[in-house]
Image (tube, rainbow, N blue to C red; front, side, top):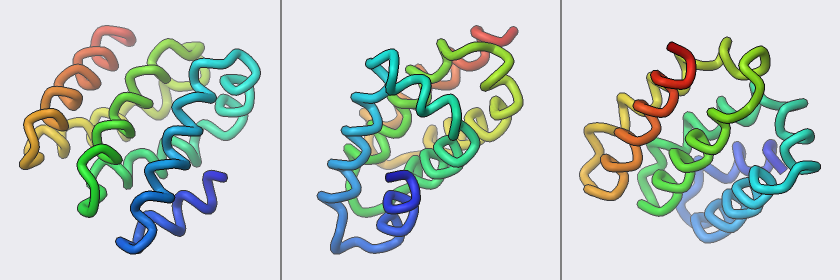
Length: 118
């Protein structure tokens, strides 16, 4: 699923499919078994989400990617701490987004990741 999401994220014709896959991923973040699967592939997933934070074709994709980052901040410290700089860099980049909702979510993401690992 993550590979498909990464490949589709470069094409603007598949923006609805990208958003649908992102919603599936966010649903997995709410499920215990889904979390286990995500933790196993955390590096790839965070890399794809970091790309989607600057996805130009659909605002809700950018916003949802940031929301996924916020949900991932509750994962075990040993699994996500190494990825913290990449997440914070993506959130900082989103602070300049043209849409207010994305900027607000970027602030929330940055605060969550900074306070979780301080």
